[in-house]
Image (cartoon, rainbow, N blue to C red; front, side, top):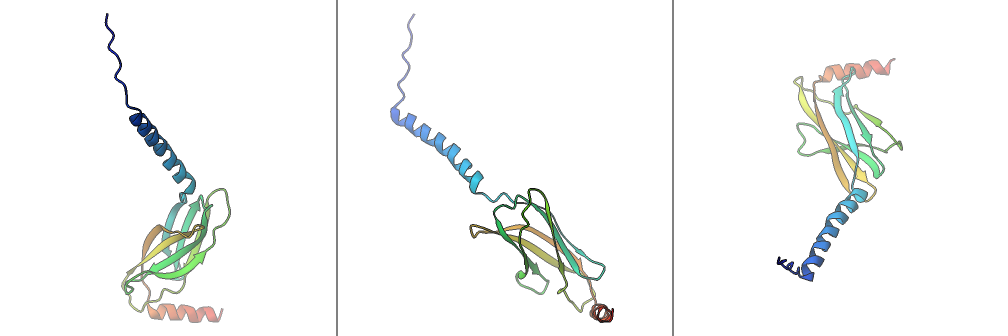
Length: 154
């Protein structure tokens, strides 16, 4: 019985493969610790009874967030405009946020799309878009003005 000798594997290939294995485990581990693991759910916008827009969202895993930025784009706008900021609320679970947009005003009676974009400004300076939603909004200038006048005398 003759045994075939095993072919000798060059040592440079062994070092090369160990290097790749180390890289394959090191990079995902680093990303797990430095990544933005924020979870946004239920990001939505609705027209309220007072004909204003209520923007709501819920968040989990907010540890690295410095603040949320809400931006709005109306049909006549070429880009999103800053609306408001919200500071994160320290919590171990789900946190709900809301913003009542009272500054949307139109004189047209047809429904137009209003788009909201939610950004998270992280502690490391990065800004990530974490959500986008839209709502079709209809308001008449008369109704809006009359509602504002009524509220002044209540």
